[in-house]
View 1: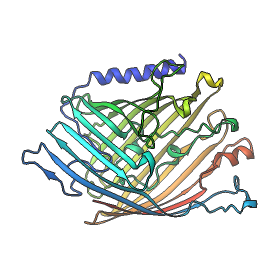
View 2: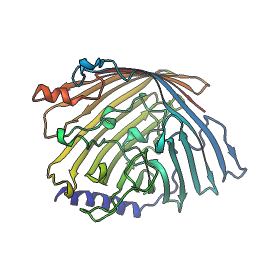
View 3: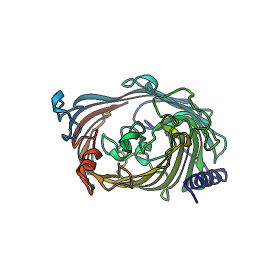
View 4: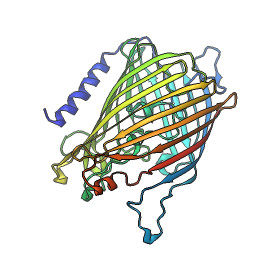
Length: 406
């Protein structure tokens, strides 16, 4: 069975399972705060069917990045230290709530961004029955535990590099640089639970990411379907719903486990030049003061017929991470991140260990996070391959972030 047929079979299976779902109820998380959270006030009707909650999340960070000599032209006084100083990753202002006890909604802007990314997310979620809901608008695509974790509650201030770094292809193809992570996008999604422990998500998205809020897609000449992102995810939570957090001092007496599988296909992505398919496995365990998480993912990149390129590329990545509250408000963290950035056809891997800590200032909504990450390279056939593999990624990076949520 070729890759095209495999992609269709996997996505069709997810859709079939989704259609047969049955469940008592499901919850909706807006990706920043959860409706009903005690972190801030909300206005609610006496019968509980209507609620309105404003929220705010601010992050300011001090960053240090040191790059290897390769890729730097000393004749132009390019420095090893770059992209350093202060940054403001998120300045999110929004509101969320529910209506008629059937519709949940969310709207937020990220004032630290511009263009289409200024609108961080905007969606409504309609519960058609106890087992099926339809979510439409701009929201997180159903792929990767790291992205699906509530903003501001990730283990470290920087997401795993294996999800966020662009891939490397032969030099003549460097204009095509997809990432394994998908993040926010515009689309519609069917979701719910098949039973008390098994949930599903299946949706269609533009596939253009958070920076585009307009309809720009066409039909695929090769596949004869709309050139969009088709995504699905199935999650098993045998101990009940897994909180979308990787560290919260208010959740130190939990025992929750998440095991999930996901797949997506982005048809005619990268300026209609490639068809990118992704597959992922997730594990997370929240046990009292301990959090453990791990993911493994793969991306297959094939070119459209009009490109007249028969070569295909496979990229692998993953991480394992853990955090432990050594004190009621202090969490120490560690992560090992891995990426086959130059494709499985070439030797060489990136090893990216990181350590950090989080301190939650009690009864203030303030959180201080710090991390350090090192980029190591191993197994490359030539020195040139070794030099090229970490271009654009800092060998040494450190971040100290102050976050406020309301």
